[in-house]
Length: 219
Ligand SMILES: Cc1cc2nc3c(=O)[nH]c(=O)nc-3n(C[C@H](O)[C@H](O)[C@H](O)COP(=O)(O)O)c2cc1C
Image (cartoon, rainbow, N blue to C red):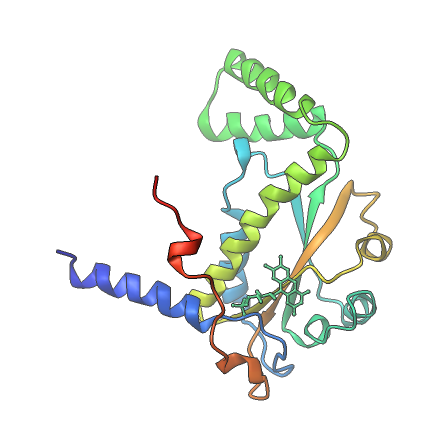
């Protein structure tokens, strides 16, 4: 039998996931507090990634002029300029030996691995990364990043903060505006965050999801 607290947690999570929706119209006057942004960015930072490599970077775009420019290359989607916050999710286009060394240095600091352990780990990461051909490495990096996007959406929903995940962006234009080539990054998606406008008719629409019998199979 579940305790009352467990039941409350389950209800709270499912209610929050039903409450959230991909917000089309944000209230441009409502801003997310610095404290809440700390929580949201920490949730993104804590996302799981394969081997823990975190082959991505997040760009928080606060400059209104840059936001305007990005809206033009995001199919004029109003969320880009009207939401309180905008985070660009960019995957690393490569994963170099220098990236591996940075990661392992941090691992050693955190967990006190011996030099031999670090050397072994380096070999196994190098072998894994070398297994990808051409654009496959970029796509693998991007797949890790989408886990962080999911974590952000759920965290925001639990905090009653609205969000819209967005792939409707022109990646080459994002690269130009944000100097992503120089940074070894490629933009895949954006998450805009803030508070829904009263005028967003989509807020009350029923969710469209496949039934469990179709979505899940028990084997
Ligand atoms: C990867 C991804 C890309 C999306 N791109 C856009 C987008 O560019 N613009 C937009 O308004 N919604 C976008 N959406 C929102 C989806 O249309 C929405 O999540 C889906 O219809 C389910 O509805 P719900 O999130 O409101 O429950 C995107 C969602 C995901 C997960």
